[in-house]
Structure formats: structure tokens, C-alpha cells
Length: 157
Image (cartoon, rainbow, N blue to C red; front, side, top):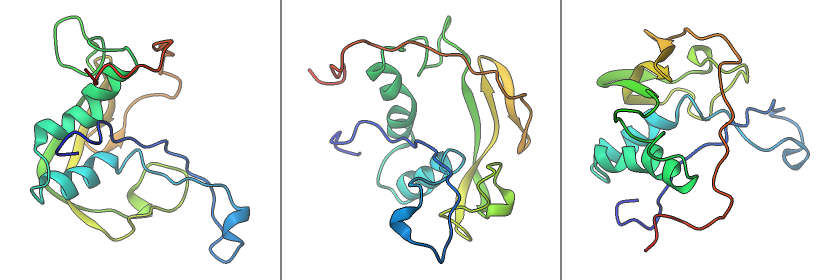
């Protein structure tokens, strides 16, 4: 990420039920990741000196918006852009556990991992989604946005 080889970090958040004693290949692939993506990447990247906070915002927000043709409506803080924001406390220590996640998956790949930095609030188009650590939005508030028709990477010269 630091040198630009990777331009995006994302999660498909595919929280499939798992049978720990079952056949691994017969089970659905994927795991719950959307709630832990920012804090784990921040802790592993920024806190450990591998990337800057600015680079983290680029790979999580700005670059995906550019690649999908949604920038500057998405991926930036600017007049006229959607107010999709996260209020992040870089000094908050948080132990990730299945019981404190909002997913219905019932597990997390990061069970017991402690990170330094955790989201306190988030907003979608200026409306509360996460408020003081709890879900504040009603389901169904998302909106489909069409993306670029081509797969040309606007990050490449």
C-alpha cells in the first residue's frame, strides 16, 4: 500500500455461518469484515508505521470512489459531496469480540484482538448510522449508485 502497488483495501463482508467441525470446502466462503476493516487496517498500517493516515483514507475511501466513477460525489469531504463520514478515535483501545460486533454472523476472525483506534460515529449522506458505538439507522437507507461502464483504472496514468 505504501508504494502504490495496492490502491484499494476493501471487504465484501460475506458473513456466512460456519461449522467449525464440518468440511471446510463444503461451507460458504467469506467472513464478517465491514465493522473491523477500518480499525484493523488503521492499527496494522498506521499505528505500526507502515502507512500514513492520509494513505489509509486514500485506499479505503478516495481510490475506490475514483475507480468506480463516484468521485467527487463520494470519497472526499467537499462542498456538494455526500457527507459519508466516520468519526474515529485513534486513542480508543478496543478488544474485538463476536459479542460486540453488530453482524448476525456470531463470530469474528479477530476474536480477542485488541486494536488501538475505533469508530465512534458514522454518517451516510449526513444521517447517523453509528452513534456512540450503536447502530442508529434503520435498514434500507442505502441507495444504488451506477458506476463506470468500463474497467479502466483512473488511478493509472
